[in-house]
Length: 246
Length: 378
Image (tube, rainbow over the protein chains, first blue to last red):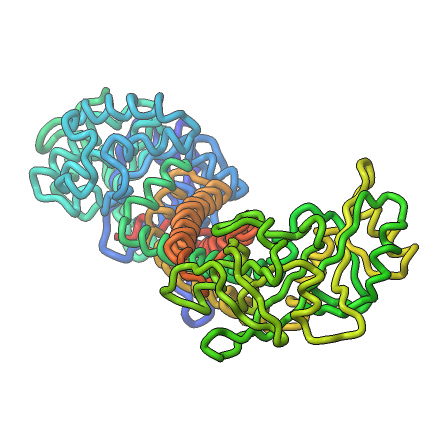
């Protein structure tokens, strides 16, 4: 019996399955996942490699369709949504922070940060100042015109954070945001995410292996073998530096 | 988004130059070979082009091209003059003669006989002497390239004597004439003299050159002459077309050049297509990130096409520029024909844009099917 869907939930996932391949080669990455995430929450998705974390966030972000089940995000039924509408949904509502940053190497820091605004149709004249202001808040005001190859890993991840937030998305997906960083840069990155990104009208999902960042979570969902096996509520900021809502 | 596409393209300098090189190489080959082909075709009609002032050429009905001379009776001149709409009509002799030089050696020359009274068809650009010098007994004027071919390294010597058909011919001037397809020297003389330099024949009139009266179009006059005399009459442009068409249809020239141009197209497509494909494949992750962030396939297609268009334009400019430079650099080689009309630029541009279109179509499928979730894979 699936649990009832709380009306306040920003993300509602019901009995979601996802298969890859077919026949004997078929792999079931998700085996009936249920998950609710309320507005304003920072949820961490943890578990061993191959347990289905990335598949689940890909489905929640609208970049991957489930094989079965229901997915409602910010009031949108992603399963029933046509592909073109899912593209528009991602453009307006989703910000991404990737493990490998995925910055465009030919663009400067400020140009990279402005990409979502440009995708959304803003002119460069409007997008670049907005991106520059955000990078300034992230401490990169002096590196605006640097190419990614001229920035350290931590600085690149801050550019990625700016890019993820510049268009004010209501869903932020962070895939292993600290795994390529040293401890200090990982802590700074999580503080920026928790301090800058978490808002009452936004959901933040962080996929991570990094136990050092657990203290920044409101809840931690643990996955194993394509299922969520436990959800642990945390008091955010209890360990390590206390993040702040903005 | 086109700005991002452009930055992505030029951001990878080596790949960018590789693609541009491929396109430029194809454009160079296509433009250069097409221009040499056009130069050769221009040679075939050089003697029509050199005859200024006559709007209509009248000839035997069996003539297929300008060098296919079938002599007519001189009386045809008066029949042509009798057609209404003819302002004037004159005789014109064209043939091949064998010239015996002072050294005793023989050379073939193109012999042109101009109307004795008007010199219609005479060269416009005299280098030594004047056209009026042709009024002297046995006088001929030779084209400068032909003169240098017969007497290389020697300055012009007025009064130099050659023999044609055992008759003395005195060179009294040098003229600039278009290069000929046969590359023989061109010798101008009076019509009455030309028929004596030529081997004896019952009929000697090669062409009648006619000019329409004011208000009569050349094509219209040609039609009147055709219908009233039974001769073949063509406007100057129609005769150019007929001659070029003859060479296109009856020689291997277009096939030989077509093969080279085709190879240029294939090589360009292969180099540009492969490099562009590799560029796209190397950027799949970036395209995946853009798709994850909400860029649709239509926009991605526009981006790839814009990148292709950019390298096409740059490659076309470089290739055509190099081809033009080649033509300019070799302009002094009398044996090389190079003529780049605007049609060559259009053909090259169409070929180049086909190349970049093919290259982008080869690549775009990879971008279309790339899963935006690729960005989650470390």
